Structures are given as structure tokens and as C-alpha cells.
Image (tube, rainbow, N blue to C red; front, side, top):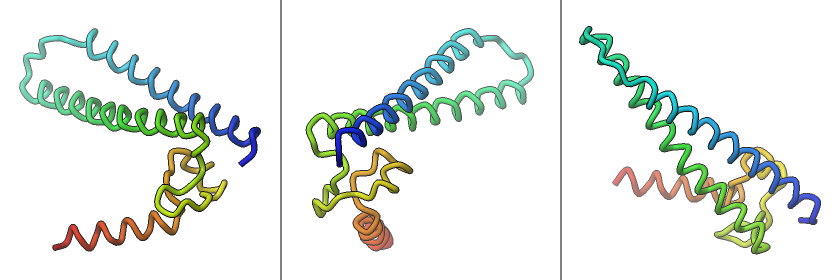
Length: 121
């Protein structure tokens, strides 16, 4: 992968991370501002469910940010774009769709098949 392509992915990852962090900040602000006492039990339960869903979404995004940071580290270390299982280059098309990918499509499919087999036992 050439320097121009690496810079493209670096910018894409940083923009993605910034977007997730901005969403997270707005969620925290809303949750802090939206502490109110709702007398109706059904309305309160609905609001608590909404908050729990929002927090689960933010937790998934926190994990995604860790993967983005890992991809940025791989760019800095010269390991970005290579499969962690086979060492083969990951296709640019796959990286463009999922820049945090650590495996080629074939290696990922093998991994998921093995995971499914072991999970069913």
C-alpha cells in the first residue's frame, strides 16, 4: 500500500473516530440535562429503556473507537492492510468498506465458521 492510500485510510479513521466522539459527548450532555422525575410509571420505564439502549449503543461505539485506535496504530507501525492470520494483503475494497478489518475476507469467513462450530458444541 502506498503512502497516499495510507493517508486516505488515516483520514477516514480519524473522521470516523471524531464523529463517534461527538455523538458520545452529545449523549452525555443529554443524559445529564435530562434527569427529571417522571410520575407516570409507564413513561418512566419507557425513558429508562431508551437510556439503557443509548448507553449500550455508546458502549459498542467505545469498543469501535478502540478498534479505530488499533487501526491507526497499525498504520503508524506499517502493519495496516495485512491479514493478522495469513499475512496477506487485505483488499482495498474491503478496507474501504471496513477500515478496521484485521483479516482478509477469506480468513474472516474461516474464523466465523470455526467460531460457529465451537459455539454450537
